[in-house]
Image (cartoon, rainbow, N blue to C red; front, side):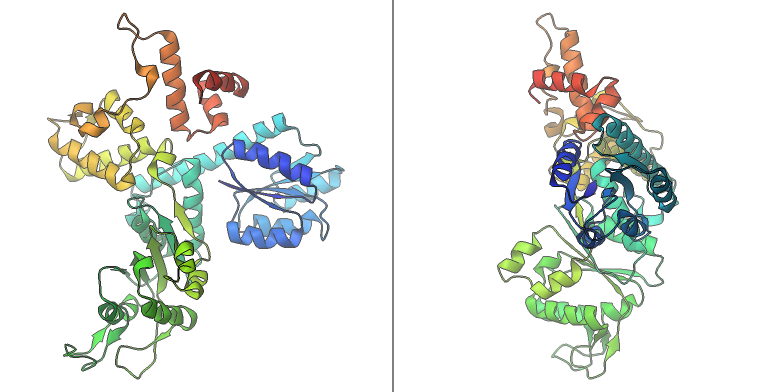
Length: 447
């Protein structure tokens, strides 16, 4: 999740930044209200610490923007001079809490745990709605880990702003096409979802596919053809492997995004497109721009509110949620509804690094359902690379062939860390111990 600290005192920013980064937040800082307003629009923070008195304005002046539907952040006001009327006014405007300086970190920890729990419950609710079918064809977007909460929030925001182009980045198999379809469905646009792979066609064919062509425009053009920008109407065009698009086609795409106007290949008539642009890539486009392999102006045009999908290994407890989702979905499709899985099956899924990400997980689940006898699946139905992936040294049994209590505790701590995505506060809460006790145990484990 993203946090924005708005305070002109550097010491306050440094202390809060250190505290939040230890909790797993991506932290941004601003010293003035003007800088903070622009930054908030760009990064869409989940959490904001807002100083009551800023060099160029009162914090209350900035508060309405931060809590608006455009940004929708949870705002914690901080001030060196607490006044009851100020606190009441700020709370009425949408602030969640009002803290005096210096901030009591122990008190703040309790507040953040409450805020984070509320966010997780919201996305758990979204997850259950998806599984029940209320979310339509984007039901495979499953996850409540901290990394994925921000992704789901961006999907929701972009769905409400249909004129904004979308750039989705992430490694192969992380679910970029699923995110694109989710944005399309939630947008409730009237046109279809059409897609094209930018790497699968030659430059000439790609241009023809996108913009269409007139009869006789080239040797094989025996008839007039409508392109995807026409066929999409008011819908969505999804460009997979966007970074592989030739530079000449990129220039024409930029014109459509800027003006909505295009022409068929060989045509003289201007046509208009209202289709939404969604592009996806597993490459670093900013680096390609530096190398001259991707147009800088197009990059800045589409890089409005980018979505970066984390690899599955960084999504903590989402592995089990996704596994349950695909087991339920695929088992029903394959006539094995009600299939059961063993504890060692789930444990093997948790312990694997998933280099192929969500796509690999889905394939593994499908394979296990196919080869399982009856309705019971165990680790024996998983590929060898999953069964041979050890949970760690804590799983080694004692010489007597029975694990010690220390071994069991160590293994339990490691599992809790994986489940929470290595968030120490949530791990401590999950285990029912204090953060200081957890830190002592992690030091012993050298984690």
